[in-house]
Image (tube, rainbow, N blue to C red; front, side, top):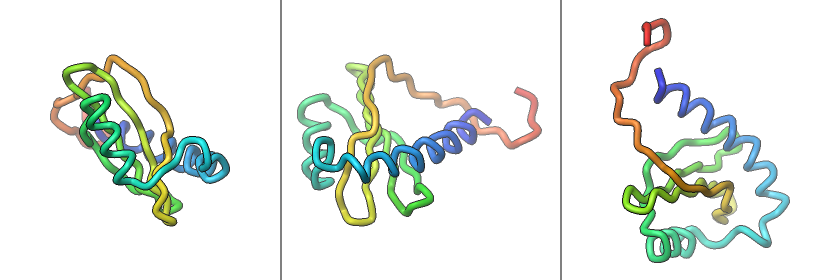
Length: 104
């Protein structure tokens, strides 16, 4: 259930932030390869999850299990990848997925 809710909330966040990202591309956007390389080289982050937003943007969560940093990006249909959010204290939730109606 937690993974389902996380995926659902990530989708909502992606839709909202994709709209904002489209208006602020200049400051926080670059080609995807540049963004991914920078996240890997500077922060040791790798992709942890991926989803598709309603505007066909690809929302990805990158994180480092060593440093605990995380970054959410969205790649827009025009090919630009924009930073959405970043933070620390990332933890991976490997709990088994549940279906709606299951008792937690």
